[in-house]
Length: 343
Image (cartoon, rainbow, N blue to C red; front, side, top):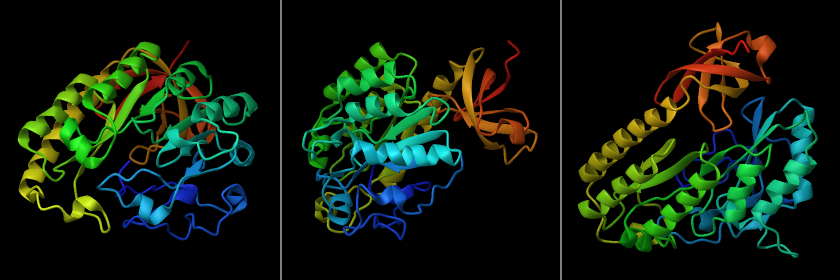
């Protein structure tokens, strides 16, 4: 995820727009294993962010995060479990495990741990009727593990949803970004996901107009999007950040070209999102009810295990926090419409 994103619901990782940790965020004097005891703004009463690793050791040429958040520091699995149990005791049903580069979890530990180890640990140690859904962000393609794919496919509490930013489709642009992977190696990850977890959602991030990006290079981004067909794609036009290498390069892409490319990726992303939504029509899916539909008080809203938002008629006082089987009757670009299944 890029440094410009704000964790709007997020526990200890809420960032201000310039990438600095705010008053709810981490700082170097904070106990990384004890911070679950500190009152943290969650942003929602059913789902919560839970930090598992702070900082980032990568040095992507566009990203300010390593300079403002420090090196990677993994929290112990025991501390993470305790935070999840505390959340469950106050009514939370879903957690999203959070890290700038979550696949790096545990590599700073002795003995060394992996993110797949953490997923198995939480899945096995969270009692039934507590936290029923586990999600996570954000994976880095360079470190993405087959064991994580297996965990998502096989573990009951881990949702079938992958967030794997690709940032660009052109290999030279990826080298300039210092991302450490190629178009082909990224697509190899996608093929493994599709083979092991064919119904999983795949989400990503992309930056257009990075310094030196030609029209031909941009076309490779569109090619990759066509090959993957993301369920959801966070799209950004490159903007220079202070104290980053790319900000000082002379081959900046003109704003009008950036704007044109951003509109083109957004249009294609919307087309693919609708295609991915349409596969749900006629199916009965498990929806965790989160709240009332603010635009229709007779409806509630929740999400599938793959993360698609669903709207359907229901009493929020009865259904909030419950998992409901819903028949999908309509597909929209970013959401679904359904009705409570009768059998």
